[in-house]
Image 1 (cartoon, rainbow, N blue to C red):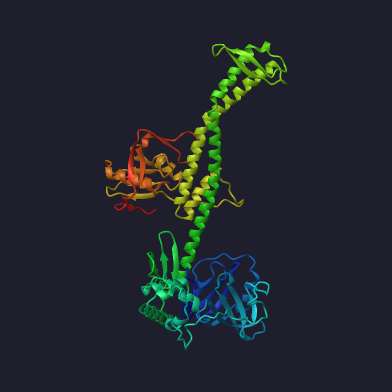
Image 2 (spheres, helix red, strand yellow; image 1 turned 90 degrees about the horizontal axis):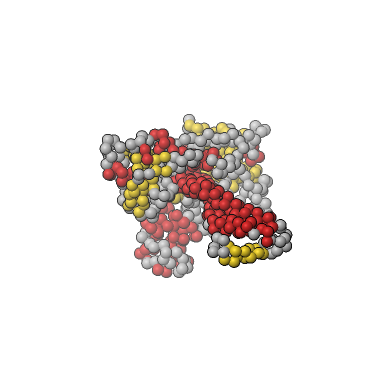
Length: 584
């Protein structure tokens, strides 16, 4: 994303059009670094969002609702004191920098009218919101900066406010003439053309540099020494074209959207990308939608990562249990050997003397061959006998337990892997919350908050209609899998599931006789909604629902089936072209 000086100018242009002359009716501070001004202007109410958040500093109009703290923070109280009911008489930008100045006329406690400046600096980790008087003496700031924090510029009450400075060129200067053609002689030969703009000119971001090089048909990987004179002239001409648009405030706000998220926003169309440019009529809408969408996307990804991390811990524990159980199963011979040694000692117990370390007896299990049996000299003869019987019994008990518990642990492992698959394929927070709540209900993860349990909004299974008017339903989570297979499906409907791996239950309800194409389509959807959706070929089992059963006490989504057939699905062929998605 690129909240650079160009975007800042587009924002200021929009704010001038909508807010200049408006009255500040309310000031809130919902979060530590965010301020919202409620403004009435031109018979409409607006919310102006100002943020000095290190990662998301920005200014734009907003339509979002924000919850405010019970007790307003100190800086919010200062703003209310000086700006509440004030009139916005000017909005401007410092050069082409990411600094916005709102000049507000208000009446102080003594009844005198005066102007105040609310300055927003959008500077990454140095972002700040500063209130000054008409002479730019600082009244207060969201972030106070003392000499220990910055040797360059202090931001403290009573100090004179100083605008951030650099030695870059301002293209908005009335006498601007230092374009690429003039800058050419000063550029080092190893400089890359796209970096020129943000290195030497105020207000331009890497996004701008990449775009202008692309529009000039210049490979930005080349160094300046390899750029031809014709290319330099073309680059310079495009630069002037952009400068003219910036000066005349002709902006074309866009969001660049990939399959997964919004990649960036800008004040002009981005043509150097394979992703879609979504045009909007407002730069504020572009900025707000970008941050809201990506914040939700980032939160969704973080929640997924947290849940999968917890499940991986359970998977590790379950695999460890299985390893021990399988090891116990492998000790069946050891149990038999201890039983045998106990029998031999019992038959020869009269020959054992306390204090013996071993005894040699005839093995009547093996042609009376002589066998040496170790003894515990501290134990009596019968204690030695019982010691071997106890060892045998303990191993046999462990084996019996392993035979019963291994299927349970395997089912648990499958359920965990299935839950991970549903987590990865959750498209929004509501769907993810359903999976999370199911894991809490099954005591796989713990509820973190002691507060009242939040009601989770239930989603519905994915529903498609085929060309033959048959219905295909796909579960989004384990509970939906159970519902589709055990409650909604009729005994003659078809059940499909990826073979021996985690995935959604798919139910095909034919409209009359089932067609081969519908089976293949449903199988493709079963493969697509599984943990192996990215494979080239996927095996999918299918059978009638009457052949599907649920084991006793099994977790949600756990079933077994018989009398099934297996189809190999080619995942490089899209079988969904003729399907109609039925919206829930």
